[in-house]
Image (cartoon, rainbow, N blue to C red):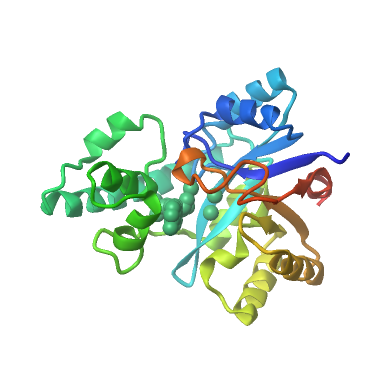
Length: 279
Ligand code: AMP
Ligand code: ZN
Ligand code: FE
Ligand code: FE
């Protein structure tokens, strides 16, 4: 029997609902051999997860997910094997945190001026140590009864064009790669079908990313059909990238996604991690 893994997991350090140790405990329960902790804009959950990994006998890959600027779009890049204590990474994340805080203030103000009882102070009390983002605001909309689910909150209010959507600045692409590399990490292009690019655009972007030092592309992902994954594998092959896979598990914040199996029958083989290590 081959061993399975999940290279894309969020925790309470960003917008997941499992603590880093809790996520590792779940991985052990469901029989995964390895998971990567890939919180948005922070590696603050990595140390706890690694310690839990020792305890539960699950390999924990230190990681991060950052949004980089591609012609104004936020493209997500996974950084694997980063050193969470890296100074360069720390400086980058400080900038991102400041930018995010300013954007969050704008969202809170917009909600507030509509008479909704939302403030950053309350949010920070409710989610201490988390990277607060739109998912948390969507959860507030659910709590306030404006929508029934986080997904509906995004759809109706928090996506581009929505009443409470506010843009944030993404990291210039070269800067992001420099820092991932300086902190010992390997960059992987996350969930390529989530941006709405045409096949031609996707090919061009993958080519550009490969030229900038991306070593992998997430071919297996929650909800991607076998055909879609196969097309991404061909793209990986074309640009000599490592195919990787992960669910983008967020716990109950994205209840339709399960760790390890995604929306149903996703499986990521251990070999993908072994190959990524060699890349
Ligand atoms: P932010 O970085 O604060 O702008 O929030 C972006 C994050 O929101 C993404 O990384 C996803 O985890 C989450 N997200 C985006 N769209 C949706 C959606 N339709 N439903 C649930 N979560 C979403
Ligand atoms: Zn997320
Ligand atoms: Fe993402
Ligand atoms: Fe993610």
